[in-house]
Amino acid sequence: MTRIALDPLVADLDTESAALRAAGPLAEVELPGGVHCYAVTHHAEARQLLTDSRVVKDINVWNAWQRGEIPMDWPLIGLANPGRSMLTVDGTEHRRLRALVAQALTVKRVERLRSGIEALTNASLDRLAALPKGETVDLKAEFAYPLPMNVISDLMGVDAADHPRLKELFEKFFSTQTPPEEVPQMMADLGTLFTKIVDDKRANPGDDLTSALIAASEEGDHLTDEEIVNTLQLIIAAGHETTISLVVNVVEALQTHPEQRKRVLSGEVPWENVIEETLRWNTPTSHVLIRFATEDIEVGDKVLPKGEALIVSFGALGRDEKQYGPTAGEFDITRSPNRHIAFGHGPHVCPGAALSRLEAGVALPALYERFPDLDLAVPASELRNKPIVTQNDLYELPVDLG
Image (tube, rainbow, N blue to C red; front, side, top):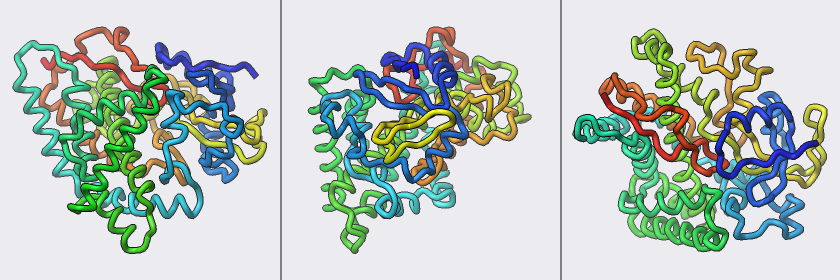
């Protein structure tokens, strides 16, 4: 099996994803830093493995980890070994840690956040409208970032004063370019910041999910301080990064497909279709780290060996022709059915999927209603990906608001 090295600079994600699909459904890959693992790259096999109890989150199953081959200054260590939370356990322990978060993020409860999301969206649009006419705007920094960060912070009870520091630390956390000598300190700083937030909430509880996690622990659900801190970090990280990329990717897709943009702006095609097709075609999450095989597992005509690591390559499987037909590589907002798994599948499916969809479903129509003549300020070919293996993320999205 030929090993495919994932580009740490993410210079051409589409070409890399195509190569992974061609090598699939199970491809042997090398992560930045020379770490070997396997990637599932086809839709059907991904659904199968994501519900297979022989594939677990316990890093101690990983042969390379047991042999001491994964250094603590590996730039992706925070994703491979983020500490104990619902992300890193399975079975009854996973259900225990996930329960409160899942209850807070049901579709019905998330819908109650709509008015607040609308208010935050309108405030962001007002700030954009107040900028000097003709000025190029980084839509990612000025619109796509503040909305999900404010929404998830309100949900978790994180003060806006912590946002700049969080942004700085998460930039390092996700990047493959963080110098190894800075990784341990970055991880420690994240732990210190989130411990402080939890301590503040314990002293001054509010109407937020962090306070609810603390109260549940004190009432007998037995969440440890480590579990509360790591859960908070996980939700803040996942709760804003995915939605930022989703909003940015939708705008890029519509601006490079003007006929389809015309159809959605005229009301012929609903925004829901645009969001779902973007999730499939240009998914916010390119690869998800990391699971481990407790025994040899057949995947198509290949085998995922016992003790080896597995990543899920959503960027590759989102354009799998076996699932979506010969037009899988095309952006088509009329595609039906569109049964993608961009938010995962099985027990570890993203609990924040409904929230991300709601934020995008509020923000994008409002953006185009306020600025119907919005256009990219540079050719799409000049947009650059950030060096993040897990996120399909641009440095910036320069636009002219019209």
